[in-house]
Each structure stands twice: as C-alpha cells, then as structure tokens.
Length: 332
Image (cartoon, rainbow, N blue to C red; front, side, top):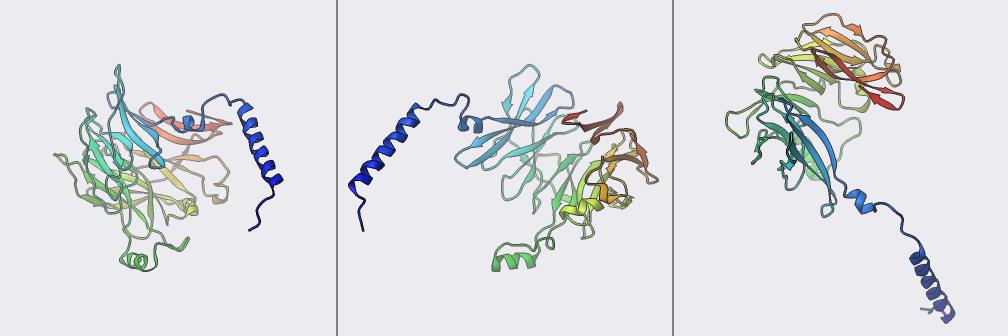
C-alpha cells in the first residue's frame, strides 16, 4: 500500500485544525436545541366530564430509550393540580372517554398483543381490561345510558393467510387483499373485568367506517363502504342497526358519499354529510348537509347558503355545530 507523502499529511492536519478554529469561532444559534424541541410534551384529546368539573387529556412525551413516543392520560379537577392517571409499561394509553354518569373513564391501550378497551376510575387506581377481542379494537363510543360500549374491529386473519405467512412471510396483494371492519358492542359488567363482546355487523358486503348511538341507546347509525380501499369513500352509504334484534336497515343509499351521521337530540332525525350525486366534484367542492328521518324517508338539504367546507361537530338542543374553513382559518 502506498503511503501519503509528508506534504499531504501536513496539509490534511492544517485543514483539520482550520476547520476546528472556524467551528469554535461560529456563534451559537440562539433558541432551543433539537433535543429541547423533541423533549417538549404535547397535550391533546381533552374531554370534559359530564358535570363540567374535571378534564381528562393525553400527554405525549419522547422516549429516547425506545426511539418513540409515549402517550399517557392525565386528569385535572377544577382548582387542583393535574396528575397522571395511567401508566402503560410497553405502550401508550389513548382516546379517553367519560362514562355518561362520570364514574368511569374508558381508554384504549395495548397491554398485551392487541389494542383493547380498559376502564379506570377518575379517582385513580388500577385499570381493568374490558375487551379481549382477537384483532383488537379501533374507535369506540359509550351508549348514552352507559350500559354498553360500541367499537369497531377488523376481521380475523384467515387460516389460509396464516399458513401462507408462516411459509412465505407477511405480504398482501395491493388493492386485492384486505380485511373488513365491523361493528361490535360490549355490555359493562357489574364487577371490574373483561366481558364478552357481541357482533352487530358481518360479511364481505361492506366495511364499517364510522358510527353513532341513538339518544335512547337502542340503535346505532353507521357509515359503510364496499371495501377499505382509498377511493371507496365515494360509495359510502348509511344504515342503522338495532342492538336488541340485530336488524339492519339501509338509511341512505343515494349516489355519492354519505358519511358522518349525527342523531338529533330527540332521536327523530339523522344529519349527515355528502357531496351530492356528482361524484366527480366530490374532490373539490364544498360538502353538503342533509337530514333524513331516522325511521327512513326523503333526505332534506339544509344550510344551503353556507359557502364553506365544514364538518359536523355536534347536534344539541341549541342547534347544529359545524367547523369550517374560512380561507386559512377554521371557525366554529
């Protein structure tokens, strides 16, 4: 091997020394460092208790050892100091939701192989696991009477797919292989512990995309698409399922996407969003709002003169609340 000449070695040393001198002379950039920014904690998912005196919220922090983020649930009462309510050892606790009577908080956490629903008292203590669903849970919502929690869960992997994965490893054919998501409910047990869930929808005709309880806790309105592919939202429809009989009846099946159902406070109407029958304009025109009788019937277009692209937030006795873009700002 040919060694570098003495002049080249001297030149390299001088270059290195010069770079150190320049670096030492450069002023420090004012403000927080990269690590300082990464260490900032992020607050989100704030939910007010039914009596208006307590708030649960999530706090996300950087976990440098695990190269990720940890999210846990905190609680603050009026006039008191906040305190951390959950500690999930190898994961996060998210999506806190108050029971209607304010005595329990449901949240999602992966304290095992899959994400499940857990319950905890707002006074603190150990959380109990409510669901033990094979594929874990997605979104969930308390029934207004507090007796049930509805949740979405994807179908289990088939024996064929499991055998293929063991042989060849995990893979899927894009746009051809997927699993449907369906709707379930679980009744709240009298004593802390898990409870068996009941399936409300099934099959390969559609996948559930969102849902909302009726005010009397007897029915659930839900949106669904033919499959979970990206563009299938253009063919979304609405249906209603009765939790006692299991009967499912179509509600809105018009052309165009129907989604985001909200019940009126008296349970007689359902509000939803759509782009109308012109699917081609759904990508760039403002969303439209319709209400339809919960028992079925002809939809009625409302808020016709609203020249914004809003989303439904709530339907209360005082009116319908929307959040919409106004140029670069979002307003209520």
